[in-house]
Amino acid sequence: MKEFQLQKSRKERAAATRWRRSYSVSRPASEQLDTVGPPP
Image 1 (cartoon, helix red, strand yellow):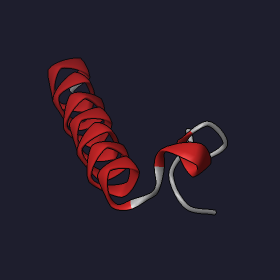
Image 2 (cartoon, rainbow, N blue to C red):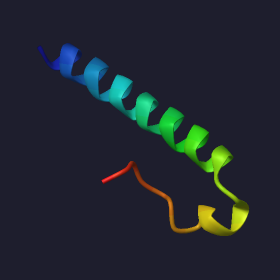
Image 3 (cartoon, rainbow, N blue to C red):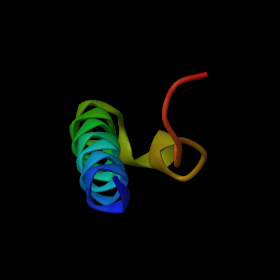
């Protein structure tokens, strides 16, 4: 059970990192500073 939760959170974290990376690439550098999290 704990192993499953760990795997799930790791997968979610990877997805968030991937989203943040692709989002920051598509924004101009001046806007990157205030876009540090996932969309609301």
